[in-house]
Amino acid sequence: MPQTDAANLELITQAAWAYYQDGMKQSEIAAMLKVSRASVVNYLAEARARGYVRVTMHPDVFMEHQLGRELADAFNLEQALVVPDGPTPDSSLRRVAKAAADWLPKLLSSGDRLGVSWGQTVYEVAEVASRAPIEGLTVVQLVGSQVTPLGFAAETCSANLARAFQAECVNLHAPLVLSTADLAYQLSREPVIAQQLQAVRHCNKTIFAAGSCSEDSHVVASGVVTQDELRAFRRKGAAAVICGRFIDADGAPIPAEVDERMIGVTLPEMQNKETGLLVASGIDRAAPARAAILGGYVSHFVTDVSTARDLMARA
Image 1 (cartoon, one colour):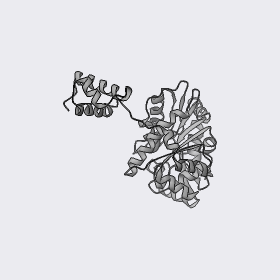
Image 2 (cartoon, rainbow, N blue to C red):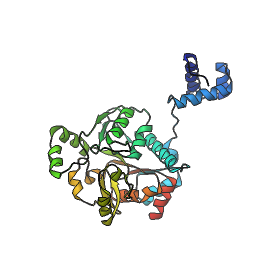
Image 3 (cartoon, rainbow, N blue to C red):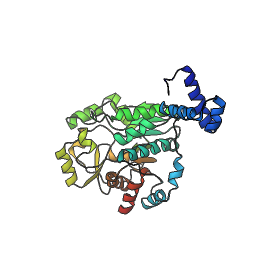
Image 4 (cartoon, one colour):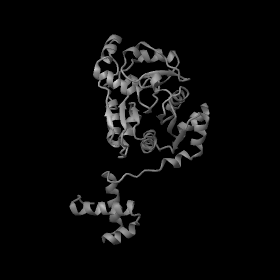
């Protein structure tokens, strides 16, 4: 297809509107625009590539899936959404993230305060979230900032979701981990940080991922803990990481010195929310997801078929 000029742009938008909004067939659009059907196919592909059109699937379809119902019943969840596996782990993650992004606005209402975690999974959700304005919504960054070579900064996750929902955004303008507990305590008492932490404590809904405790865990890559510290947590029975903090297989917190040096949401503040949306993809996330669910952090769950089946085997 030649480089798009003003005339072609007009044809692209006309074709996209006729196909997706008016429900016209491609052959009908071709006759209307006086072009070939192949040109219409190209126009629609260009509209998707440019982001003019975003195709979504209704999440209710996947919640009615038998595996989703079984998962919700087995783990006493309000709802579980299970999407088909992708051909690769990365594609499965993208499918799960897109499903979560499409479902999330349906779980939110005016006046809600949505706490947003960090990491690749939450970042992927925020990246694909479609524009869905929610009046009176506040989006809150749950953990302080941390330099990460992977680019999944906490402030990016919260800011992207706030932009998609046209919501007020409360970022946490402090590092996640400081060098001493005293420094963390003093910084948390600064008026600006104290006000932001107050917003963290008053979130009624959350979206988060449960990280693994494997050697390539995100908390190691981002410098929250060292490999030696991670091994020490595993010896204590660590099964998952939520917002930089460790829990065991039953969801109980594993306290450690690093907790006193952190600025962000605490584990008790993450429990028993009105809505706790956990997003997980991959067999290595089944055990962390189970720990998060048993610990009372989860009311709603989005995952893929393989992870759901592994969880059912653990039930």
